[in-house]
Image (cartoon, rainbow, N blue to C red; front, top):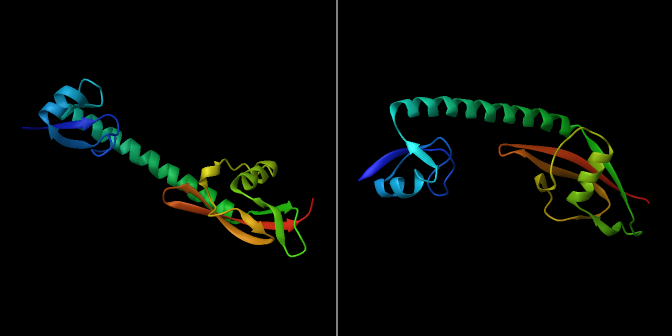
Length: 152
């Protein structure tokens, strides 16, 4: 016999927080309800969850808007990173996501991102200009222009 429950936390393979799911009554009674992972889908609980779902959607919409604004700012940024290089343009080391992040912080651009958000397939090993993508939101990707020049 199946039972409808509302998930209070995301459960892998079942659903996200706030989802109304149908599970076996034993699974609900023995695991989901005692662990505080779900609650019974009563009429008042459904109204409450609908309200929470709307709040979550609004938060997600605002996060996406903020990421889009940051992407627009980021598209106009040009970073210059100096690195030691040979005469053929090959760097003696490489420029990685950590280096790009450090230069962003040093330039005080007021951009708060993490290393894992910088989408760099491989470290940069040659002088030149590169467009580096940054995932700011699951649906928003910004771009930085990075100039790697000889120096130091």
